Length: 223
Image (tube, rainbow, N blue to C red):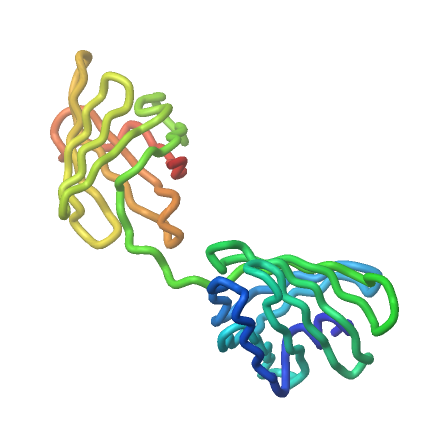
């Protein structure tokens, strides 16, 4: 592993300094996926960050190397890294919600040698159909294509896409079974959510829900 990756992804100790002039910075405590690129190549690592006040310590259980840092304002962290390849500096910028970061690193006394971006590993969001979905056809007739706007109350789901009204319920934690109606006909519609809760796959048919499907769709959350 290259110097920053080995340095940035772990730490041994942290001296915490509280700066009264700062407002509360975002919390970065948690597990992160870090991608580094630069003169030493490209690497991807998993790190654990622990924050106390304005101070941060990073750790990597696989190698024990790392860095320490401190928020100097509500989004910027100045830090140091140390690893088998040497030691140096880090400048890190954290998003207001504490879910992403980016920055640069270098050896002591030298300009930047590379950059990095990181995303916090977040727990899965509760599945909900509520919102606006961009729906595309994935086979068969092109029904339900375009923006599909849905509301949810408990397990009940109501969606509108053009002149089509879809009404149904969650039959399992991730699958909705519904009926549809429009000026040109009616039928059934079934869609199930992927693990990211931001996309779904669906099938639909005409008439009673005992009829075979005639079309397939995919949906991507847009709002």
